[in-house]
Amino acid sequence: MNELVFFINNVLISGAVAGSIYAMGAIGVTLVFSIMRFAHFAHADMMTLGAFVVFILTAMFPGVGAVVGLPTAFVMLPLAMAVTAVAAVGIDKTFYKPLREHNVKPIVIVIGSLGVTLMLQGLIRLFAGTSSRSLYIEETKRIFRIDFPFSDSRVVVTEPQLLLFVVTVVAVVSLHLFLNRSRLGKAMRAMSDNPDLARVSGINTNTVIMVTWIIAGSLAAAAGTLLSLDVTLKPDLSFFLLLPIFAAAIVGGVGHPYGAIAGGFVVGFAETLAVFNWAVILRPLHRAFPDLFELPANLSFVGTEYKIVVPFFILIAILVWRPTGLFKGKII
Image 1 (cartoon, rainbow, N blue to C red):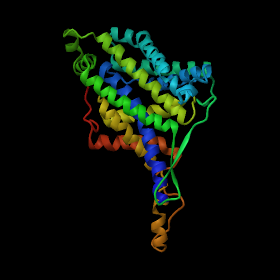
Image 2 (image 1 turned 180 degrees about the horizontal axis):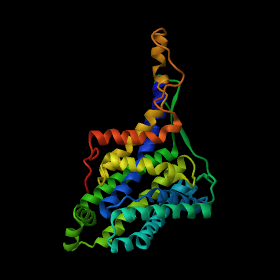
Image 3 (image 1 turned 90 degrees about the horizontal axis):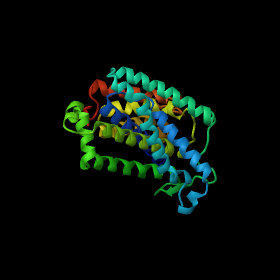
């Protein structure tokens, strides 16, 4: 049973954490694509920006979390989501909206988003430096060790991971209700289907675009903060997130928010399964049949240093099998 506990800790929990982060990031990417028809490469940098806003707020008010029994950084998250949403709307009005008004091709806006990426990375490094930071400034991260039946080992889960799971569920349910029950959500779906028809039907497309950026910016701040709570906050956080997030959005089906969620978890679990040491699981079998085969000490599909290429293997495999993605990529 110790091997099963090892599998739960290193695959199920780790995969769920990575999948939740990728899913929240991919939702923002796919919403922006479905409404404005371009791949927003600066999305991962908005995640980093949101996390640094949380860090600044946590440094200014380090004791707030103790009042409610939660990490201060998590308490400050709603403020950071609002700040990041405002920043996302500001970036759109400053850089992307002028391009749209000139009816440029989508590839021009994509290149513009690369410029915004470099600009955000430069600003973050200019004001925050290049060192890693912890969002637990005057607190310690709580770690829960749960006994497992018939095993000496324990299932280990951290406080940020539990918060991440809760926030992911709330975000997914809220997005589903918003898109299907609210008037504005239905307007977003209409605009994603046919922007010109939505415009002549009286839908305020500027409002729809603004709401899209608010949702994307808020989710980006939440994902970046919750990831930084579990590991560390680094200025190059976006570099390790951008490619898996885009892979998740494409695997699920570009323009499909539910596909983005599924794609995020597919990519997250694929990464953890690829680097997992399967020798631990096979060890009991080897003890029962020692002459059957020679079991190496490390039996993973790829080394940890090659983990970043895994999403692209999954991406290629799924696109060959299903070119439109798992959810038949469509506009919401």
